[in-house]
Amino acid sequence: MPFKRPPDEETIDCPEQIRALCSTVRHEIHQVVLSQGTASIREIAEQLGRKPVSLYRHIDQLVEVGLLIEEGTKSTARRDAKVYSTKLEFMRYRPRKPEMLKALGEFARASLKDTGIKVTKSIMSGEAVLPVPLRDTFVGSPAGWLNDEELGELNEHIDAIIMLLADKPKKPETKRVVISMGLYPA
Image (cartoon, rainbow, N blue to C red; front, side, top):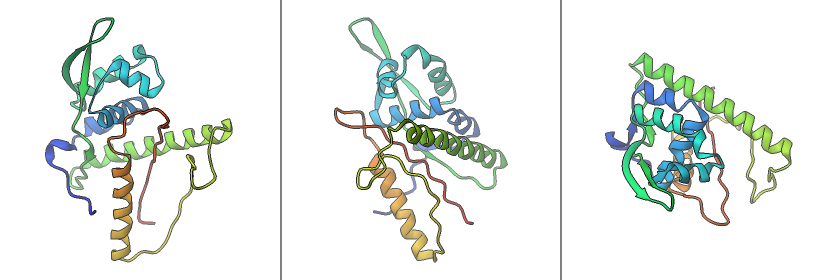
């Protein structure tokens, strides 16, 4: 299924929002809320294997730039907990806005650097599952010469991967995986 341009209300299109996602923690928080629909700080922390207290500052920053929306509260055994949501899923590329290009470049650099660190940690710790078909760790830079039709097909595969990972909250017998991609004309 070909990818459709997202509506404006689902688009990250200001440099401040993109720069906020340059933080690995804030990017992970955003991704968890995106996959959950709504989530409290405790639920986000559980998904990420972190302590809730370590997330407050990051969540405040995401709310400040409009990446998270405070939806209200829900009752818990201890007290009412704030619940957050987001509709902002896609980054908009605006080639005529230098500040957007710079922010997207910063995001690409931060994302791929973090990926390198985490892939290395996965391999060095012995936790990586490398054999196909259930590998959970991969690194490589496959390259090839593609015509426009083949480039379109490649984009359909990228979109299929994105859709496969979308809206997948934590469930028993699942593991969180992240795919960082960088496609560029060499």
